[in-house]
Structures are given as structure tokens and as C-alpha cells.
Length: 289
Image (tube, rainbow, N blue to C red; front, side):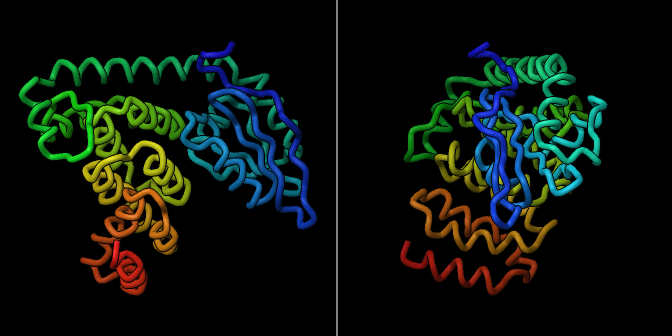
């Protein structure tokens, strides 16, 4: 069923434990995939393989006698589908349960997200104007593709959409916002950031990795960088302060927007007098940028 929103269930190979019992993952084919990892490092490897690709489950980890869920959205869908079993230790059993019990459920939910994306595109087109397009382009040296919708209307649309999606599982929310980024439209990226900011108290390490993926793949101007960093990565760092150290590595990125993101993500923390050592280290690395 290539080209459709179908979850891939065919293993390239089954996860195998490394010598430490902490490595190994089994990638699943399909645009929307479940990652199976063995141990914490296995989770990270599986997560990196499909985050940002519309994945419904962001990683299931088999750890000697139990399956732990540690990823965006997986637990909500697993519990809702009624198959989640913390005593299941076999990654193959996890994949088989997902396949057997969730195929139709996933197809239905993916259609739900695509419908919302289409509606949001229609609203943005209706709200835009030629004058707004010309005005937006004056603020950027880089080429941008705007609808011509002002910031107040973007915030109002985010409030409206939030009322409909606030009860969605995290995985659907992630797919919706990633779908907005994929359009490449200026206001869609801003809308994704403003909408996700309403879930700021829920942001942690997994969401931080998702935001990093957006920066790597979709952010291509200062406005998108600042929106993601001041609204999203900042929220994740506030909730899990150890994430601030991740930003030091961003300063060596070839992507100038990711380098900018390293600094902007700490602006609010600096105003609160937090993470001063990390701020100075980031600033020093970017001094000649």
C-alpha cells in the first residue's frame, strides 16, 4: 500500500542485543513506523531512525522481562488499543500485537490528522492576502512561501485548533504539527510552534528531540528558529533542565539556524539567571559566527 498512511510492520531484521545488552533495533518499513529498541541506547537508535517521519509510536523498549514505553504518543495509543502488556518481553510479540490490533485504528487516525491539515490549509488560504504576502517577504533575505496571514490571526487560529486537538494522543498531535512543517509555508511553521506551545508543560526529552528534528529538516529562517526556540525547546529545558547541555553540541552544526537555535533556546533561561555556565559556553563558541 505504498503512498498511503499505512504503518509498516515488516522487519528488516529483528533487534538483537549487543554485548552490553543495551544496543540493537529493528527498523520497520513504511512512512509511519514503530521503532523497537533493546535497552536505552536501542531506543535512541530506533527513535532517531523515524522521528519526524509521522511515526505513530516513537519507540518501544524491551528490557529483560518487561516492555517499557518511553516515547511521544506510544503509551496513549497502546492503552487505547487495549493490547499494551508490561510483562511482554519479546519485541517480536510487541510488533505482532501492534500489527494485529492496530492496523485499522492507525489508518483511521491518520485520516483524521490529514483531514485537519487540509482544513488548516484552507483556513490559512482564506485568511491570507496579496498585501500580506508582500509584507511578509520584506522581513526575510531568504526565500519564503507565505499565505499572507498576520501573527494575530495565526495565534487566533492556534487557539481554535487547540480546542479540537487538545484531547488527541501525543502521537497524533506530533504528526499534525510535523505535517504543518512539511508544507514549507511560512505561517504553517509558525502555527505549528504556537499550537504546540499550548502543550508546553508536557514537553520533555522526547519532545526536545522532535523539535531538534524540525530544526534540522524544516526551519530555514530566523522567524521559525526563534518561534521553535522561545516557545518549545525553552519549555522542554524548563521542564528537564539537563537538556540545556544538549545545546552546546548544536553550536558545531553546519546548519546556521541550528547554531542560532543553541543561543535563542537559552534567552528566557538567562533572564531568569539559569544555566549561566551553559549560556557562556554557547556564547563563546558562537562568538565569531
